[in-house]
View (cartoon, helix red, strand yellow):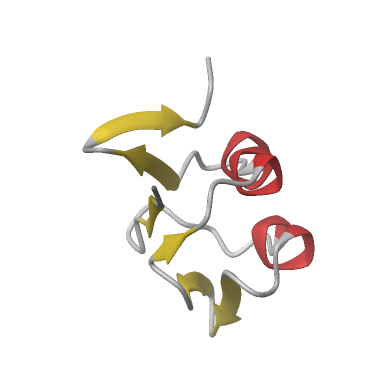
Length: 71
């Protein structure tokens, strides 16, 4: 099983929190973050990155269902 990770480039404000938490999945590219690995093994730190995004620009999906950010 793997999770799909997406960043909405139109919503991202480039805070860099995601890239500092999980540099193997996210990187800052100019003024926005991008995903370097769109599919990842389940890992709590990826959900933490989605939860920590001030713009709520990160989505983590499992089998097509949004599991992050968490409410």
